[in-house]
Length: 330
Ligand code: KDO
Image (cartoon, rainbow, N blue to C red):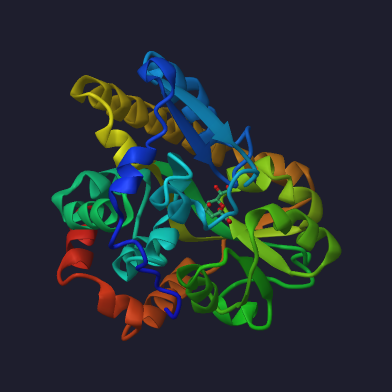
């Protein structure tokens, strides 16, 4: 956890002034994400969120990290250069290590559990800190899906049954410490790389594989350059719809309420659609020639969870929060 960044404790009035208020009190909400335009989260924000706030806000999405590099979105919001992003707990953990609890393997159980956790009082302290120290308001939780291990090797070349089978496998994981730790905890040799570079890296063989949920494997066409998916479900992954707190503060109470329900509605519609895709994509991927199979899930869960015990990550988790998260699950 060497790169904890706490540079934004002293956000100033300048930020408040920089809120992107355009003519006629119409606010522009620039949103940057590494995701594509066809990713379900992008679709829901464009189709559900944008029209719902149109009376007072212009939603301006930037896809494929074309505006801000993956992992720099929070800093850009904090410095007033961006109004929105679909951020991750791993990215927030770069500033506030305790967010790593939501990025830990096999903690969230499913989409409903994510929602219960996000709306529970246990999140209050996390949300308040992000607002006060980073000027980032977390509006709602989006479902990204169950992350699995997706490799170039055929199943005959490498069958993944337990973590030991991933020894020496060069697995692309996103660039932050929490992601890299998860890759190691899976038993692999993690390589940091931004999302937009993954297809080419798989194609050229500079990595052996990557991990993402099935809808992402399909949307980003990773199935064209890989041969198998071991359904490890190592992380039921989420993103937060994040917004500049200064921009939020510049809205009227009524606008804030509209924007909040627009974000919740987009998250809900995205969740429903993403779950449906997840349920239906195995057959599509098999038709594309990939082997899709379940490894020894108990072995993976036990191994991954054991790796976190005694780490700096676990030490940063507020007392009792893991128990509260578990109690909200099944
Ligand atoms: C990825 O880089 O693998 C990841 O899935 C990480 C997520 O947190 C999220 O940023 C996502 O990429 C992008 O939105 C692209 O789908």
